[in-house]
Length: 299
Length: 270
Figure 1 (spheres, helix red, strand yellow):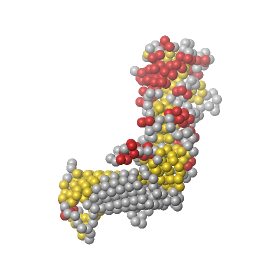
Figure 2 (cartoon, chains in turn brown, cyan):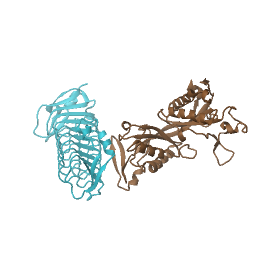
Figure 3 (cartoon, chains in turn yellow, green):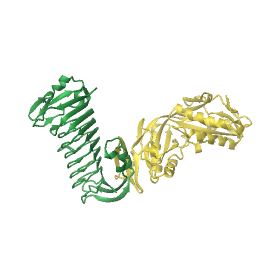
Figure 4 (tube, helix red, strand yellow):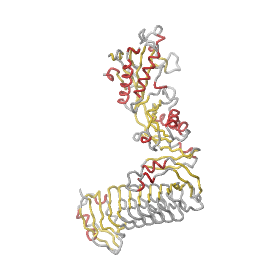
């Protein structure tokens, strides 16, 4: 398949089941809601070493938030429910509770309930009070700038992590420009996050390493400087840079949609902007049950 | 299907126990069976059709017409469905209600909504003492749900209130929120003496400054984030509480009752 001179490889992205949740952070203004959201989703690019994958889903207008203030929706994904709950609580406690004027609310009403402010309330040292409003429990925790308001629980749902596609370009600036265009479009899609810095990862990994202590290592087949030295390069001589976009989402359909708009944005730049191919990372179908076939998505 | 309607024919001298006439108890009963239900009236037992004219079939929507202040226990332990009452109601209206809604187009007697667990009780007129309170000797009053009074309420509103919300558009009598364990009482009008006497936790929200006991400590003026959400939850009510102009988030906060554990609060609009 070729779109605007860009070859879409006959391959698939391989994704795996995760547990996901959403939280809504509000503050006095968008600036401080974003600061808290960025702190909460920091150091959460990959479950390989961060314990979770997290990102900002979108900015919310005051009429979309429970307390009528500007807000930001963030999503966190982890391999299991227990890990997700731990990450959520730790990050909420250290990054949102501490952030001036912030409040924290559930972003998913259904699913299994996991603690949001339920245990953070103990920071109140006995002065905390709860309020049940419209059937939902909120904790009011006295803090030095006033009160930190946090909903007791949020919903944990089944999710999918590791949806991805690779952008293969003639140069590094062209690969980055294409990924930026893709991310801009993908951020408009609900229920997904792209957890890597700016949504783009330049160090895609393969499973395993020659070093026994490492579970993942550089994806040498897509490293342009190894074209002549690795046994299994997947790059033609004209490709000088490869970047990857990883997508976590609440459902296969959400990830499908995000991949479609992202790949389309890259293809819109086309071969004339140095974009040569779109490929995807997979492990032969052995790692994850969710397969995102590029050509089917773009059909 | 039209509402199952009980129209009062005579006003007995003695009080009438209306507790058998709740939606869940009348479900699947034929009109003749409903007519034959016996209601305690003083020391007598009267058939329903001796007191009321019956019409309609829908037992999930009961209407009581020509009601007066001696019809007690209307909607007691209601477990779903709707009861509309035209006229005044006696004591214990909505007592122990578990689910559903009761609307009284008149005044209510003492102990309205006492020990109710969930659901909504709306009183168009005034309410008597112990609104949403606990029965004498019991340790827990209302445990959930919402009571809305459009007129005034008597003394001891929310006595031993455990959970839930009591909204009063008018004024409340003495000892409002006494012995409160938790929950919310909001009074748009004025409050009497000994507000929040021995309250442990919970919130009393006021539009007018009260006369507070010495055992309430001033915590200063604050903008509280939960208040807009609380007011937002009243939006669907047919009440002044749904009016944006009556909402606020800036309050003077008093903590008390310090003679108890002191975790309660009186919030006064500023």
